[in-house]
Amino acid sequence: MSTASSQKVVLKSTTKVSLNERFTNMLKNKQPTAVSIRATMQQQHLASARNRRLAQQMENRPSVQAALSHKQVRTKIRQDKCQWSFLPCRAML
Image 1 (cartoon, rainbow, N blue to C red):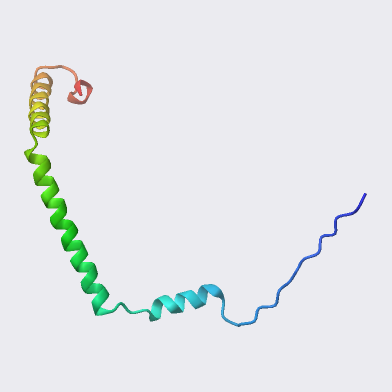
Image 2: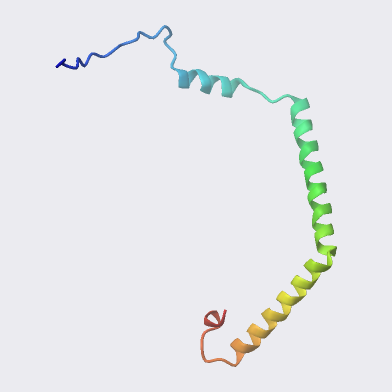
């Protein structure tokens, strides 16, 4: 049987600056360019416009309109039941 030797390997660092400090300094010194800021704003604006258009399309779909009107009817029925019940309204939901 061989005995396991528990020797540590120690590597001497070649720099005095830790990796964390190096990346922290890089992030602090990084300044966004005007072009990248403008491009990001354009992308956000375009995405917002697409989302508004999609929401409008969804709202106009007959299946969505039917589901929304059905939900409103069910909510009204629940409210009426809660009004005449001795139980708390949350118990009816």
